[in-house]
Amino acid sequence: MTALTLADCEARDRTDPLAPLREQFLLTPGRIYLDGNSLGLLTRAARERIRATVEDEWGVDAIKGWHTRDWMGLPDRVGARIARLIGARADEVTVADSTSINLFKLAASCLRAGNGSRRKIVTELGNFSTDVYVLQGLRDLLGPQVQLCAVPREEVVAAIDRDTALVVLTHVHYKTSELFDLAEITRHAHAQGASMLWDLSHSVGALPVHLNAARVDFAIGCTYKYLNGGPGAPAFLYVRKDLQEQLPAGIAGWLGHSKPFDFCDDFEPAAGMRRHHCGTPGILGQASLDGSLSVFDQVDMQAVRQKSLQLTQLFIDLVEQECAGHGLSVVTPRSPERRGSHVSLRHEHGYEIMQALIAREVIGDFRAPDVVRFGFTPLYTSYVDCWHAVSRLRDVLESGSWQVADYRVRRAVT
Ligand SMILES: Cc1ncc(COP(=O)(O)O)c(C=O)c1O
Image (cartoon, rainbow, N blue to C red):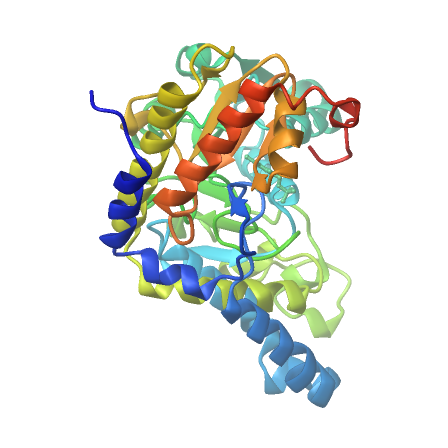
């Protein structure tokens, strides 16, 4: 194979149909931002939408905004925009709370709807920590009627049986970027009579998802990663249309009531996805997400996926070409159909290496004990970014410049 060059990367950028979208993001000159799998960048549209919400809506209308700006309808309108990206109907998705809370709500709803006929929840050992913690908490709350079966990835399919109420899996693994076959596992769960819940945190906005086509029951996901909704932006949740009316609210709160302003003593769920709202929606976060989603109105998710695969492949090829012999190994699957939109590398001094890279304006992150992650957001990552990121990684490794005491100090967010 002939060696890849900077000129090759420049040529790819010149013919990249998504390249003009980069202009819609606020990028810092000289910085290579490869952490959109953790926190996506600010769009110009979101910045303007936040400004307008603060100054023109809240600042002018104050409480009248709930009517004049239909703030109450905003979570469903934003949900409808996300629905298009995940192969769902507009009335199957809404935006509320965090991904962790949405998992609790939907898992609790599903168990309540089953009336204890099945006891088991199956998930992957090593799934993103919050997914496992939430399910552990639910098990502890409900006692022996719930059994949590967290097993290694390769044992998940076999663990799904006739006693399984719910299977909870993350479509793209947060650490390795490995993809599950969403349609195939959903089919298997349904064949056993179990419900299927997918965490789409690392999928939404990075690759096309087809929830309806696979007849997925439930889904949840973050909006601050590839959807660029902003730090702590509210999460989304999906429930398949035909399940909605029979599903109780996982947390019954006043805004999930059919008539919240009647303030009656007994909970009566609102129709459809509304019942999954418990408290007042944070309008600033919703507005920011609404603004950031505008960029997706201009793109086809197949084109996003195609570029994502080309970026991740280029990055892996460059790491192998430029950084061989320095103790790095590629954790992410090489076969494209099994790979999400970030690339993970393992190194025993991964934390320090990432700190040295960040000091050189290559922004990725670290997941314990030894994985460095590089996220590729096709809307703003260029092929030349891959080149410069790997060149700086090679320099850090060759010079040993990661061996600085300060780089060993673990920060609160890694
Ligand atoms: C797969 C996955 N699920 C859930 C979360 C956490 O979501 P939240 O903080 O919105 O509860 C993350 C955060 O990175 C994640 O990667």
